[in-house]
Amino acid sequence: EIVLTQSPGTLSLSPGERATLSCRASQSVSSSYLAWYQQKPGQAPRLLIYAASSRATGIPDRFSGSGSGTDFTLTISRLEPEDFAVYYCQQYDTAPRTFGQGTKVEIK
Amino acid sequence: QVQLVQSGAEVKKPGASVKVSCKASGYTFTSYTIHWLRQAPGQRLEWMGWISAGNGNTKYSQKFQGRVTLTRDTSASTAYMELSSLRSEDTAVFFCARDGTGSANDFWGQGTLVTVSS
Image: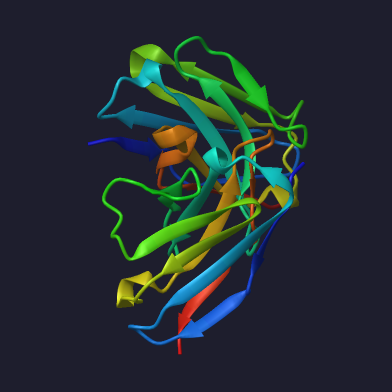
C-alpha cells in the first residue's frame, strides 16, 4: 500500500502567517487522486482540496494545493483563527486509500 | 443539503459485533458510493472499505477482510457497517463518507465512537 508521510508533525504559527504543509508518498500518486482534509477536535474531516489542486465547494481561496508524483503541498496563504487544526493528505489512486499521519497547525 | 447522520456511540465486549448505520439525505442515495473509515485515538485515518449504494457491490481493505461487512438499505437511504470479533484495539471513531467530488470523500458523517472493553 502507498504510505503517505506528512511534515512537519506540528507547525506553530501566528494568525496572518503563511503555512506550508508537505505530503510525501512512498510511490507515485496520480495528481487526480490526492486530497487534503482539515479536522478539528471532535469533528469529522472536511474536504479542502481534491485532485491535488482543486478547491472543494465553499473552501476559501487562501487554501491552495500543488504537487505531483510523490511530493504534494498544501499552502494556507494567511492563517485565520479558524484554520488552526489538524490537516491530513489522502491518496485515492490505489486501494487501499491511505492517509498521512497529519500535521497539526497550532497557534504560536 | 447533503447530510450523513450516523448512529450513536456503542460499548461492546471483546468478541462481540457492532453495527453502525449511516443515513443519507439531500441527494440521490443510489447514485454514490459510501466509504467507511476508522480513526483510533491518536492514530491516522484508516480506510475500511466501500459499498456502491446503487448495486451493493463492495470492496474491503485487506486489513479488515473477513471481519467487516458493508450493506445498504436503499428504501431507507442508509448504509451499514458491521465489524465482528471486536478487540480492544478496535476502540475508535468510525466514519462514513460519500465518494463524491472528484472521487474524494466530500461529505462525512459525524462519527460513531465504539468502545471495546471488558
